[in-house]
Length: 520
Image 1 (spheres, rainbow, N blue to C red):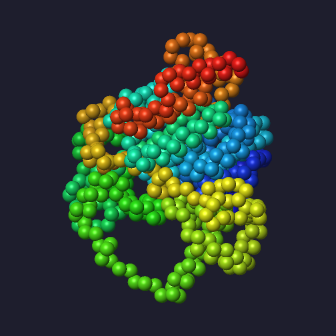
Image 2 (cartoon, rainbow, N blue to C red):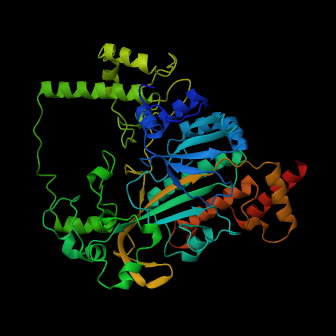
Image 3 (tube, helix red, strand yellow):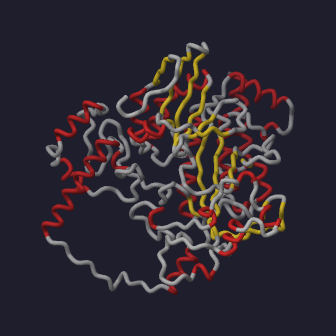
């Protein structure tokens, strides 16, 4: 096309796009710009292949910019996704903060010279960040066979259990409550779709520690980067004979650079309108308030004149009209760059944007000839404060994270900073960090509790004790266990976990599931 470069293959192939209109709306729903998506997926750069420990044997690739992941599919997964696509669309539309994997397209390539069909899907990456991920976890809630092999970069459930409560993914109480509510909504939908064997993918970034000498660097801006003495010595002087410092760099961190150790968050790392940006820790916020005077009360901004205000309102109205053209009917959730809004759009801008219909009609007509817009029914007019008519879509919902990369900051209120981290297998090596950032997402949601899985679950039941610890259980039991383990690894004290159901109710639900399986 005029947007993407032509392929350079010597053989012919047939390309099929499944449900193009539905996935086009899904891309809008997830704040994906069509042109950037095409250039990222269909550009000249090569894909980044990575190994996976999935038992399905499918191939995984990352786009060159790391925003999207491409995964090959089996015929059963392709049929199942097409069957649940209407339900998936509705759930994601009604829950903008969903953690479920965000599918952006499903395709098939028919290779005549190989006499085979390759089906694959494109989804948003859970780790859409420029931060270096120091730890990776894949947790399901089960315990049978959930131990990572020596040398595996991705840790599993039992590895997390052994490190609790010291390495719990501690979140702020309000954030944890909202996140748990969303996990419950997602698991309820997965339960209704008879889906099991999904997992929570978690990436952890350790915020590099800054010594007091470097931290008190005068009036330097927050985003300024200064070489830390210990990091620079270890990186720039590898031949100093210190075997212990060299041993801290393993194969999984071979691509780490100085930015990993001197990585600072600044105001550009957070969404527009975020409060306290860098000051997610109340303890750090209190220390900064004691040393830095607050001049916000004494500062006075000049009052713009009437013409400047009018031109600014006009420009904002034009911008909102462009956002509406890109992401309708989900334009109230995103800004022009496809990032979530922290605050709802002003109603005055909506009314002004409706008066700007005559602006740039010639340019819009020329653009529509190249890329026709998606159909916009006349019955789907936006209400001022309610939801979109006929579709009952939420007009606005505050995102779970105030970061641009959708990461969750660690709660440092009751934590001694800097945090001391020991490397597994090398307790003499201690690294310091000023906190952690967590990236979470629910993946592998295309495994239905089919006949084969039913027989496997029944066979494990016949084996006697221990069947409930396996991954293959009924979706109802799987969802309950998934939430209980979420409560366990997101709290400091596992004894304070509030279970969703007492043991008696849990046993009664297991009896109901067993009776239902016998009936089926």
